[in-house]
Structures are given as structure tokens and as C-alpha cells.
Image 1 (tube, rainbow, N blue to C red):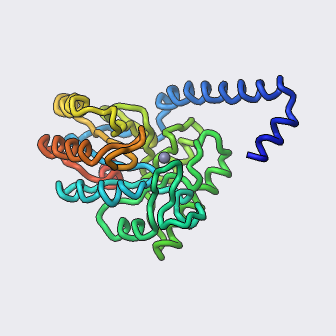
Image 2 (cartoon, helix red, strand yellow; image 1 turned 180 degrees about the horizontal axis):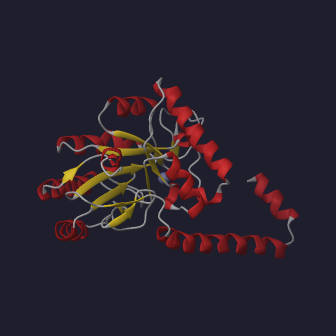
Length: 278
Ligand SMILES: [Zn+2]
């Protein structure tokens, strides 16, 4: 607070406005870039198998594990949890056992250990959870290395991280190429089904939050039946009163039930992506 007040006092009013305009422009450019990047696939593959569904959770909120995983387990499903070291309790200097930011409780280190021992998958979500398009290539590489080192330290072994999710879903051509060279798959947040020719370096995914309705899911499942493809759902926390990014246990249970009734295969992003490798 003190820092921003000092900065504001030093800045002439006009310059302050210009900075804000610049930030807005960058955001607009990022959105344009976000829309254009899919037209330059970094790892194109052809969908050539029976329809599939994957459940993923970004940021690795505590409830996605403590409440979400048992719901998946009950149906025999396994999910992918994209972890970022910035949300670890130690990194947040928090006195509670869980990293907590803006009221959302992230994972405890024991959650990470349990997840590692399970058949669910740990994916990478960078260390700092910043939009990768705002990082230089060296900064992005450092962030990926830092996250891998953090997981190694907590879990006591070097993990093979196959799956990556872009923080906030944003990617550009440069960072997509960099991530594609390092991970088997990279997931964004552009909505849709991965079918026909699709890009393993920018997988489409559908947000699983309280604005998502079972009717929406049914439309996607119908589309899978008609045209085939891979539907990836992504959620955050699973709580009775979630943030706008999360969903309730009730909604997740209903989605899991509907997917189970569809009879489509469900697996982690890592195992599904591996089946498309040449
Ligand atoms: Zn995230």
C-alpha cells in the first residue's frame, strides 16, 4: 500500500493515466493474441479414438482434493490437478496449514503427498501463476524449473510432469512453443471440445463453475456422441459456497453422474494425451 501510494505521488497525473491505458491495451492485445494463437498449433494431432472426458482442477485448492477427489473416486474417475508453488502454505507465510488467498484455501503439503500417492495426476501450473505471455522466455523457464524443484522437495522425488495448464488460460505463440517443447500437453481455457485436428499444446476446456449447467454438459456430451472428441472440464474449489471460479459438491456430483451415465471413458489428461503421441 505504502509502495503504491509513493509511486502515485511521484507520477504526474497524466503519466498515471497513460500507464493504466497501457495496461488496458496489453490486456486487449492479450485477448486478441489469445484468439489468434490457436491458429498456429504447436503440436497438432488428429482425434482418432472413442470419445473421452477429463476432469481437471487448476491451482489445486484444498477442497478440490478433500471434497472433489472422493466424488471422482466414487465413480472410478481420476483427475488432473495443476499445482503452482506460489499457493503452497510455506510460500504464503501463512500460520494456517493451508495457503489462503482471497478467502480461497489452497492445498496443504499433505494434500500434495496424498495426491502423489494416488492414481490422480499432478500437473504443472508454473511457480508464480502469472500469465505466461507476460513473462520473458527466461522467466517462464525459471518459473517452470522452480515449480518442478518445489514438487521434488516436497515429494522427495523428481516428478515427471507431463501436463501443463496456462495460468488464467493465456498463451501466445512464443510461450506455447516453449511449453510444448517441455510438456506432453498444455491446457488453456478456450471453451470447446478437442476433436478433428486439435492442438495438444493448447487444449480447449470447459469451465466447471456455478454458471455451468447440467444442460450445458448434456449438449457437450451429445456433441461427443455425434462427432467424437475429448471434453476437458476445469474447476477450482469444490465448496458449498464457492467463488465464481469454483463449484459446489452438488454440481460436481451431478456432472460426474451424467458423465458416468454417458459411458464415455474418463481419464487423466496425462494418460489421454499419451495415447495421441505419435
Ligand atoms: Zn490457475
